[in-house]
Length: 188
Image 1 (cartoon, rainbow, N blue to C red):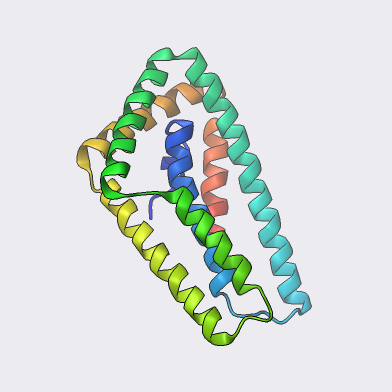
Image 2 (cartoon, rainbow, N blue to C red; image 1 turned 30 degrees about the vertical axis):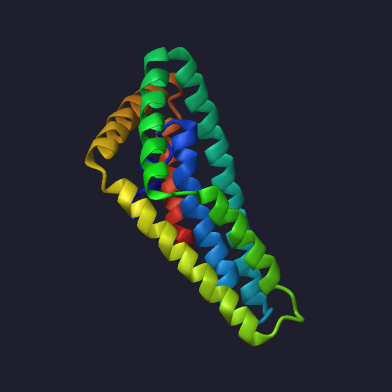
């Protein structure tokens, strides 16, 4: 899996495509597929620590998004490069049927159903299998996008150019990205 620093530097919409498919999958998988945990003190501490980590990740992502927006406003050439990449990405996504919004909506629906205590174990198992199959399909589609050499070359160039411009815009950018990567590694 790519380091998240490669995911936080593209345009806001490009970043959102990949982050929508990375972090939500991690969290939905943890919720849907994790065994029921005994509510011991250790488990409660772990849950609190995990929640704090997720909150810090969200905070860092907001900071980086703000820095990126300021950077794109100050660098119209980067904004144009970003629009070109987004257009090519959307074209590829449409070509292979990549629809993360639909997947997320379905996953949330499944999550609500699975949490229904009146649901039979058979139905719960079917829902989890449905979620797993949909997750696998999305992973395969995401992989197909990432296998497009032209698209990934455009993304890499934009990432490098944007990251350099973000560091020039705000010197704390690199520190935030490093912290974000470390936090992501702790929850994976």
